[in-house]
Amino acid sequence: MPELPPAPYLSVVIPAYNEAQRLGPSLERILAYLADRPFAAEIVVVDDGSTDGTGDLARQLLEGRADYQVLRNEPNAGKAVSVRRGLLAGRGQVLLFSDADLSTPIEEADRLLAELEAGADVAIASRQLPGARLAVHQPWYRELAGRAFGWVNQMVLLPGIPDSQCGFKAFRREAAHALLPHQRLSGWAFDAELLYVARRLGLKIAQVPVTWINDPASKVHMVRDGLRMVLDLFRIRRLHRHLRPL
Image 1: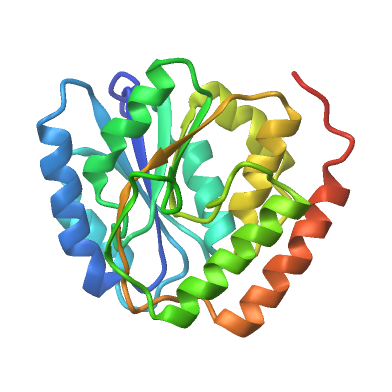
Image 2: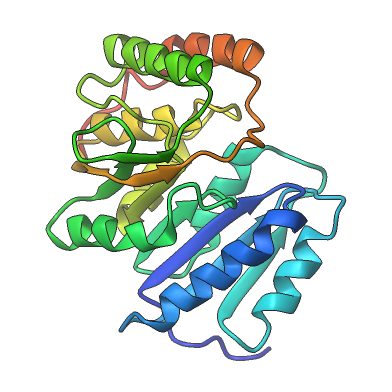
């Protein structure tokens, strides 16, 4: 069995379902970002049962250019499962997951890493805090729905966290491995679940205002998925009410 390279400082986890069109430019940008950083890193692509060659594309682009893993779910299992699998497979001291479209530019990772170095256990990107910049907006009705969900989320589950859903979050390895065994949801509210569990376990969460660029090819159905996400907030509170600080 080949010997693994030393564990890197950072693992960048990218869940990807039929992302052959968008993944190439994103990986090139991530590779350029990592090449300018003083630490070792790996890229973990979780191919979520894609039918368009997403996994093969990732291997072709990364082979010989970075430490990497390409994992495959068979069949498609959803973003929550893909993120969890990638974070658990990552070998880094810090584990960061990012949407494949890089709606939050990878360069914003510097700000999340700085918060972890300063003592946070979890650092999350936010589109709602002062200092955030929406370079390309969503349609007004999606922005309104997102703000409404954020308000309900704060009322029901996460007071003080106006944006739990931005797909750009970093974890100390120890924090991720404390959180992930408690993850139960497979839907879009899994971000809120992870943050609620983090709070119940007494972990420190830092919120970082970021630049964000809307990608119109969103896979979230505003009405169907939005209603399920709101119902899931109450389910999360019920599922994890027994948790106590570590």
